Length: 377
Image 1 (tube, rainbow, N blue to C red):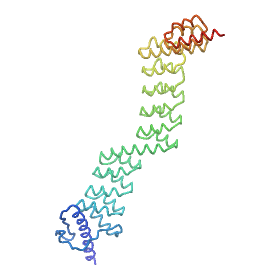
Image 2: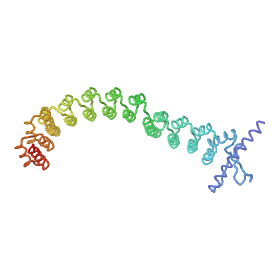
Image 3: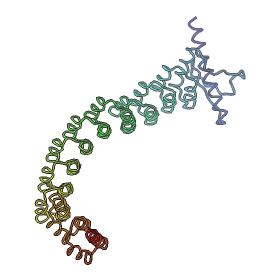
Image 4: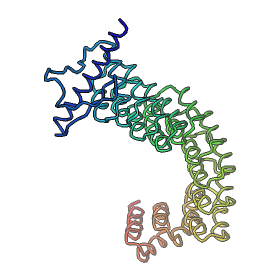
């Protein structure tokens, strides 16, 4: 009985191999030699019976699927082994072929028929062929599996591919999140700075943002968090302690505390930061005059001189300081500030002088309109 079963199995293997050989002989126009399982004797197509050979169909029995898998793993003819894989439907046998077939192309063909993500990840980590790893990796959309491959795959090329796909997939996952607790966890602990930055952009919790602004190791992430801060105390702390000039500039732009801004304008080590702080001042003309005279950087001195006129004008308006306004109208370099001062003057002698002599036509026109208004009163 056992002998009969062995003979039946051997005949089936030979039949399948012959059928596949016939298939490739037809397409390639070559005589094909097939090995018998029972001995080392070779037979050619000419010696094969003219009886039709039936290759396994989709409804093959379990035993026939096992035999197909064995052929796929071990046949020395890569064309035959890859063709057999196309007849396989059993998921476990496909996984076996994908892991153990001697021919890389056969393993690759099997991988394309596998849907089990854990098996694909295992193959991507262990296979020696990049083509096989590639086909496994590109079918994964689980960030945890991709991260594992990026860390542990045996091939450097597979690790690099998994890393790139992981970043895309993880970014897509984060973009779909709206849970502030999960976003905060990602913003604080995610390994890739781009994902932390993405999570920060969706946060509003000032305490979480303050912690990230103080502590994240990546300047871009800290800057993103600073740009969302409204807490003036935290911003003042950051502008004094942040090592990155770019991040300090963002903090300066969010600051409203004039005393802190004045200190930055006077004392920050970076000239660009000092310049931005000057642009945010709305008081303290005396400080601006000092900076315009004494700062070591020409650009900062120029910015302070320009801002000095604006602040002087605002202070004069607030105090209704007519004498100061007249001085601004005569001497301020900024024509817009001269124009603003003119609209508040009643000194017709000065206004006539401005209407006749100011270098800007539209400032002269403003002075003339002011004279006309006073003449109607």
